[in-house]
Length: 338
Image (cartoon, rainbow, N blue to C red; front, side, top):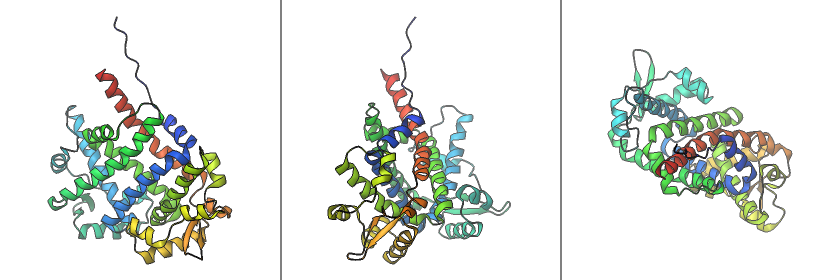
């Protein structure tokens, strides 16, 4: 009898524990990936809420493509075949009530966002049942593939770092190719994570642009901690994050409205207003001398909205399942080729 090869199984629990244990080392890469994703959305749609509505329709389309495998197990769901697949499926349509339910965005806001998306050609309406569906026009094809390529690279970089910590070492290019080879399958799960994550923050903050701006202050703070304070896990980071008693810490961990605007695409005046709101919420402190902002260590209020341990843990759990799916597929492919 030929002995069966043992295949390493990576659970979502393994990923969650790793991220919490090496929080300051690994999570900046995750937040950078999320920041890039959200900045791209904002620049395309002009608001995170509008983008979130759009993600719901995109996810439904990818699910419909995956379902073609119910008829043909060899159906190609790769990025290379996506344009053809999208144009040949029956476009799934959704009601406003469904979008409200899965995003947490108020009904009238969803209605307004959908109307805006119809005006610029991203959505169309089925007049018979008053439902809406995604319309990806030919003049948007090049833009779409550029966006996917950009987001895949960012995602692959983060997953590659995870793989190295697990001693399975997958190069970013291998991960990119894996995602693109089973594109609609992976993208359906990826968008599901993003929608769940954005809903969590929508219900907590009522304004996900605050979340995007918060990431710009969180990333340099964690990077500073990782570089100067050694191994810091999730339990420890709450004791020190945002601690800016020394001048060098303030310089390296602070952000200004102009730099936040440049990165996110949010107008500078809006950035100032939202940074001040984060100050009022207790998450940030404004340095009057140079008009820069740092994560607040002094006030306990900062943990009520953004850096609450529950929020970070839920974020990690939301994405760990998806990361484990990709890594297990890569491990399986590697084992099969031995």
